[in-house]
Image (cartoon, rainbow, N blue to C red; front, side, top):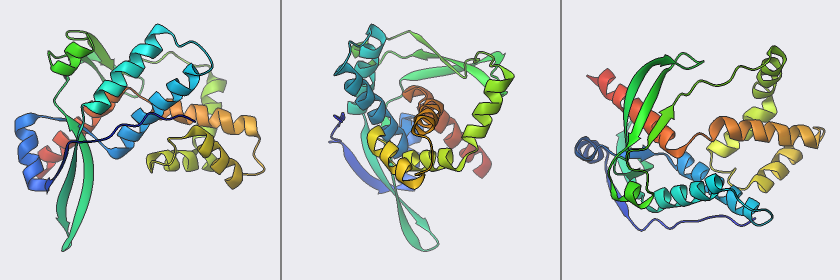
Length: 228
């Protein structure tokens, strides 16, 4: 399977204190390695699809936007002291691309639906999306009761949890390899059910790249408030 790869040329290694001070000034969009891996996975999947069928305009635009965002990232290795040992954490950052505001609406999970607007930045100008709106936590369509029960049973299964764990560890960038690994781990499982479970798992974690950045940013701000 052909995969999209990108080489990080901007790398920095600093202490956590230095990074926190820098982020107060720069107000970065911050991504984890798992989030970057998922973006690479999305692009690789679309490239693979494009080898056998024509991609629609939205899919072509998605490849263009994700690859541009990946190429825009700067890698930081953050050194922090924990119980007398130095712990290294890798993150990827870019200048803030979206400004978010809360709405009065709630999602099905009870979270406040956020509305964002793409800022006037070199990246957004390149992608021709300055001023465009983006919605985080958009209300999902209602499902039939039996569909909900089937989804709950699937997402609570050991196989689903094993898949999610592999992807979060960066081992699910190649869907074919993931399918093979799960098939070997669960040899008695129906292959169709494995593929259905994989589809459900990828859909549940493949949110837009920018939404994940905002969620991570909010989490960091909550941590700062707790420390105060």
